[in-house]
Length: 92
View 1: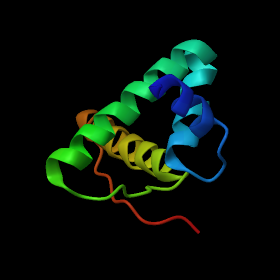
View 2: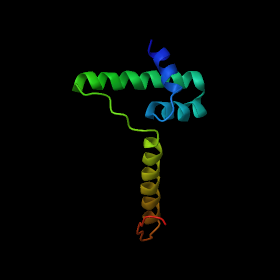
View 3: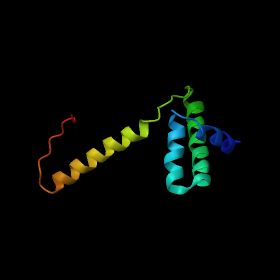
């Protein structure tokens, strides 16, 4: 049942789970991505029941923003390891 639900969610546009499926499918293939998405949904359902909270939609760009923050942090750390002083400013 969860895989069928994951299949339906994978077709959605503008959702976190739909974006997560598309990222995983491009790297691992469609079938493995469906199983992984079903697992993600199961973990999410578990936490919603445990914490008694409703589902919070993170949005399709959540993963991209997370990736940008992580990349900037890692690059800054590498530059400082090479002996540079790094000051971060927002781009134009």
